[in-house]
Amino acid sequence: MNHSENTSNNVPKVVKRKSHPFWQFFWLTFLVVSLGYAWYSFYTPSNDISWIDNIESAQKLAVKSDKNTMIFFTGTWCSPCKIMKREVFADNEVKKAIDTNVISVEINIDDPKSEKLVKQCNISATPTTIFMNPQGKVMDYAVGKVGKSKLLEMLEKQK
Image 1 (cartoon, helix red, strand yellow):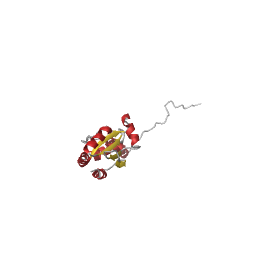
Image 2: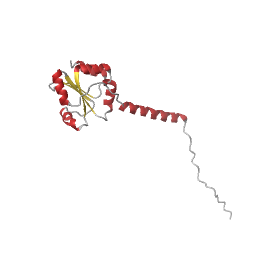
Image 3: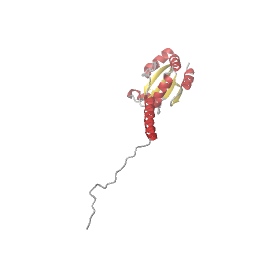
Image 4: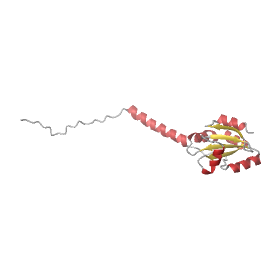
């Protein structure tokens, strides 16, 4: 009886093939673009608008200066808010119109101190921009991201 036993390890080898250079390029590009977009979505440059974060102080100032109040409701997690701050509020023309026409208030809806105002104004989405006269009557509002031309148009009505 001749048993031919194979003493070598007969486990088939798994050959790992190198991926095509196109796919390496594709995934690297995808990663870079994704990281760039994430940075773009959350990066907010500083702007020179003098935001007030206390509605009572802003209302007193509005009565004293006879200007309407622009309340910008935002959240630290709100990507459209950050884009609006970067693309709209950082613009010099918008800054000048805000400083000239309104008292600007920025309210973080996650701040427990703003809970009463958020309920009073029935804020359910961010960004929300509300314009009020010195007596507290809503004159105009926009829910969602507002572009530069639309905001300038709204600010022009506040004169």
